[in-house]
Amino acid sequence: MVKIILKKRPYIGLFLFTLLFTTVYAQDHYKPVISSIQYIGNTKTQDFILEREIHHPINVFLDSTTAKEDRNRLDNLGIFSEVTWKVVPLEDETAILMFTVIESIQRTPPVAFPTYSEDTGWSVVGLWIINNFQGRDRSFAVGGSLGGEDTYGISFSDPWMFGDHVSLSFNLGRTLYGHSFLEQDIDVNSLYINLGKWFGSAIKTSFGLEIESKKFSGPDSKNDFFYFSPTATIKYDTRDIFWNPSKGVLFSQNIYHREGIDPKDWSITLWAQSYSWYYKINNKGKDLILALNGSLSRKIGNKDEYWLDYFGNSMTIRGWKLPDSDLYYSGKEAFRFGHESVHGSLELRKEVIPKHATSFGAELGLLVTLFADVGMISNNWNEINDQMPIYGIGSGIRIPFPMVGVIRLDYGWGYRDGVWNSGAIHWGVGQKF
Image 1 (cartoon, rainbow, N blue to C red):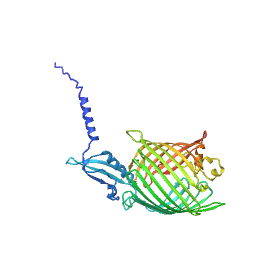
Image 2: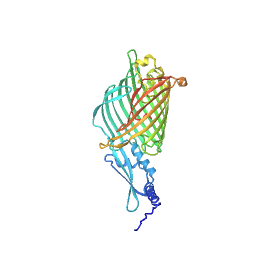
Image 3: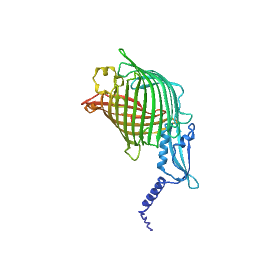
Image 4: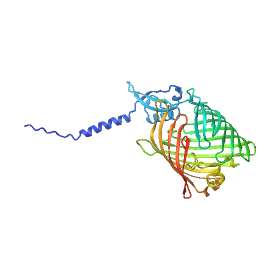
């Protein structure tokens, strides 16, 4: 009888592991020479719109960091539902760097639909929007509304109107609505023109001029203001993805001055500052992002009641019900009103469904957010430190949406001086910061 003995080979497992590791490493560090750059999927968008956002050079080794930054710049245009990139090897051992874009919904037919604003409530809006007008990343809109706001107007913007990130935008329109907490009806006619210029990729400036007539009509009073308003903004922006940044900062300084034409002796200047920081906590899997913001608002000049600000909406301290005239004139929550303020926010944003294109071309995705807000508001800056802080905590969702960027829904509870309120829901367009 022959006895067969099978000997163990202890190094086979190590050999297979080494082979697998080498293969994965080679794929992740594949750096061929990029001999050409191509893009597909832009059936409406003109080629030069993509070309000016792609900075990766040719006839050099692949730089995956630059390729990712190029992808992000294309996504930040707001006209694509999805942008991807890949390397296509060629027989001569070079490769093509290929970007694939899926164009988002870029226009609406003339259509009427309901819409909601925190300050004015429900309205029926008639709108015609072209978000990528002539395939040149221009936006054009004509519309109006009836209901909480009666409006009509026209707007246009072009981010490269006069060359490299030299932009032009204008808006002409009229709006009639009831003030959210003053017993006043407001009639606004305005013309606004703005010029912008980027210096590099991070410093963004804009200068604008507005001519506006604003009429307040109440049961016992009537006041008309006719003024011109120069405005200037400078931003330092290193965000990677605008709709949901996973890294970078956004610092903003804005000066908005109203100088009276009638009455001539009337003026007010608003100085708004905002400082935001974004950090991705996890290295693998769906994004978990910590976002922080601090904001200040200063006013100089005629601080009339008509220009009062308040806390308790989607852009300030969430978790408080929107004020109405009963609340304002009762004086029960006077701590929520003022002209000058400081507030901060913390958000923990979890990606549940990554942003991607659907079969209809529209983007789809979902973020879940936990938030905490705190702030103080007063009529005078030197009284800010005497105010008791106002808090708000809660959670919400963020959904990417064609043409507007992000739809935001939050629910939270407010807290002050040992007392919690019953909570409130907030709706907004765009991230809070």
